[in-house]
Length: 408
Image (cartoon, rainbow, N blue to C red):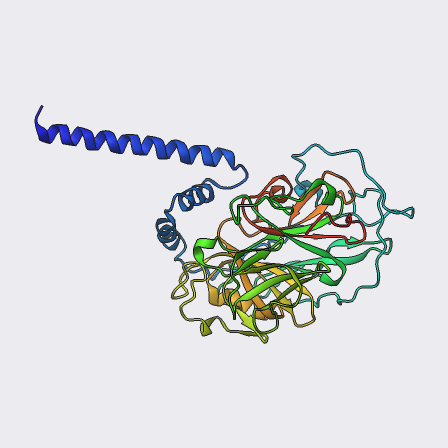
């Protein structure tokens, strides 16, 4: 055999071994993470292997087409009265515990799954959100109208509302969905994913613990992976990443109240924060889109505003409430515009692409087993936050029934 033929055989053999080994590794990763699309799993696997630049280039190629002008024929808000969408893949528990001796309370996001548990609450300090006038005519049924997704107490006072709308006349196919919650009546906690940030051991690990499960109300995704340089991350007395001045920040104070602001402006080191999570500079400040003030920021491989994808974000609204929102497929300019339209005073982008954006409320309130209901039909499996998740996330609880000291 000639030297050239031997060299070719060696190269072909090496390539074959590489493909076989990497293929096996990728398949094993996909099988270990059910509930996500193959595309998302492969992208995560590739990033974990140091191939983030390749993934970014492919995502730019996949998401470079502007949304269609033809109006969407339906909205994306999951009907809070539709019990068929509740995830029941986990066997239901028949054991519930009452934390008081009074009557039954409102259920999770639906009135048909009511366990016997009651919480005592004060009056709502955040007013119900005001409906948004649709920009497209004819409007779809329920478009722009806020619906109650979760109520607490014997008087069934709402704490979470949801709404969906088509926000653009030019790009009618875009649908945005939002959830407003009264953070003054809830206890928030940040949880640490097995991959982002990883490390530990953490008290608030990769899932809601059993001791807090009965008080769970809602949960939603966190920010970008660290390789995208999203900013600081501090929790449980550990500075995982240093905070960056001028970056948009989710902060949870010692009372479990969630805040959205800008580090070094209306949020500071000595304000008594329990958890802090940054994700790039603010998109909205003072009720205005300001993303153009941060010319070199990578909002998700979005240089030139040509990356149209499904995005999520969070903001403090002008009425003082906190709002989670998602929209797709949009570029960063369009997403900032949606935030302004929805009444954001200070807004920040969270995770993007596929079904990484996720907000769910949980029925069977008071039970050890909880059933997730996604906010939006485009969102994936809501059980990720109770079974175990590889990324950081936030969860909201009823402070009246949450055991003291169970969360940090």
